[in-house]
Image 1 (cartoon, rainbow, N blue to C red):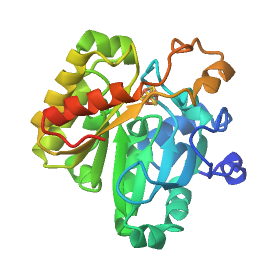
Image 2: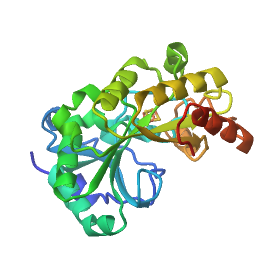
Image 3: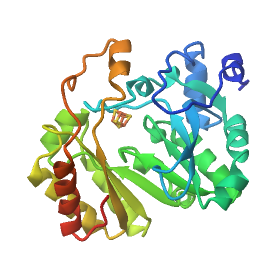
Image 4: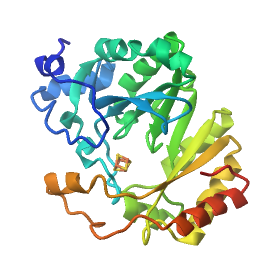
Amino acid sequence: MADSSVAQQDSLEAKSPYELRVGRGANVPETDVRSALASGDMGFLHSFTTGSAVDGPGIRVVAWTAGCMWRCLYCHNPDTWTMTNGTPVTIARATAELSKYRQGLKVMSGGFTLSGGEPLMQHRFAAKLFAAAKGMGVHTALDTNGYYGDRLTDSELDNVDLVLLDLKGADPERHRRLTGMDVGPTHAFARRLADRRQPIWVRFVLVPGLTDDPDDIARIAAFAASLGTVQRVDVLPFHQLGRFKWKALDKPYALENTQPPAPDLIERTCNTFRAAGLVAY
Ligand code: SF4
């Protein structure tokens, strides 16, 4: 498949994933999109960002994929829901982009993180990119909601050093209201990672009035602790940096008036995870 002229023109680098990016792959024929998904020879990326200190150990280069089937009420990057909002990028171009940073990442004990959107919407592309990163000797992390974890084979998972797993809720009904999707596949993927003794960092977004139910947080904590391979839990305070995207995309935003959590709620939430025997920040 030939690289798109759009891919050649569009810069992949962004200051942050909060840049609104739409329609960058809209001119890619549907047949090419299907072929790209099947082969992994091309993916759709929102952007590459550098210098992240929060998406895995050390300093990270992060590739943000486009495409997500979930509809989290608090999503701060709804432009990444649509795959063709992303820039079409050949695996060769994505690998070359990552290669620019390989030495620096090793020096800084950092690595490469694939995030989104949901990276496993493009699981063939993700698998090829992780294989390329491992071939460079770069530490790899997958930031995922886990729903499509079964799309990766065990040998493909061998190329993932760390999984940043989003646990958004424990109660099935609450989870469905929050994300539009079932929690079961995420839990199944988490257990598979645990069986493989694969390191996990849990990410939990704390939203006042939405994800702050103490019983639900305690259930998430108990589940995470039961896995035995969760190295840390990051409690991520809700913020409004993505609100402008909902407006720009003309999507109804349920959290228009929701405030970030107060420090004492963040501390209480961290303590719930700590009480389950986990390291939480
Ligand atoms: S899984 Fe992530 S990208 Fe997808 S809707 Fe939820 S927050 Fe947004």
